[in-house]
Amino acid sequence: MIFSRRVVAVAVLTLLVVPITAVTDTQEAAAEPRKRSQAEAGALARRMLAKVKVARPLSIRGYSHRRFQPRWAHHKGRCDAREVVLARDGRGVRRNAACHPVKGRWYSPYDGKWLKSEKQVDVDHVVPLAYAWRSGASRWSQARRRAFANDLTRPELIVVSHSANIAKSGQGPQSWRPQRRGYWCRYATSWITVKHHYRLFVTRREKVALLNMLRTCRG
Image (tube, rainbow, N blue to C red; front, side, top):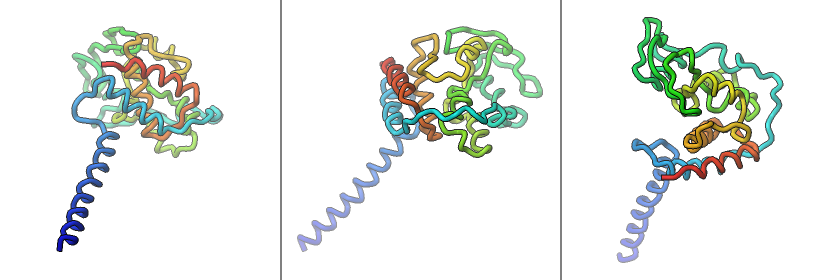
């Protein structure tokens, strides 16, 4: 009888322990309701980066912007993805009947500029489309590339100054970084989050650059 009780006890403990471990792994991968500190975000990004494949960049042959985004996809009624991001990231944004911003202020975290005209800002793809192409997106379907280019869930789309977007172009973190060092942590964690989710690989130099940027994740 004592033996049977021990078996039952062990079985109960097993049922308790296994789900807790599984839930922990799931919660770690998902975004938490509370805002993470930079140190926590950096630690999670390092773990994600460790799971991202390292490989040589693919050829740019066959790439065109239209392979990802012939136009911005609509998300909310008349609003396309760009207009949604402009409203999300701006302050005091007013839109016309077609959902296009006609007034507002936007902060560009890359260079620290406040901009008062929609004509002065761009919606940047954190992982540039051309860079994603060479990181594995060339092998995707057209539908997956379109979803990537219009993703409002991952930190792939952000409002920045037109000048910063032009300076960045299609470069990776090994050759271009935001002018503001204070944004390096956020930029690196966003880049890694996107690449991890879409299973895009990184180059060795890219990985080294990302790890160096993650060193700024403090507090």
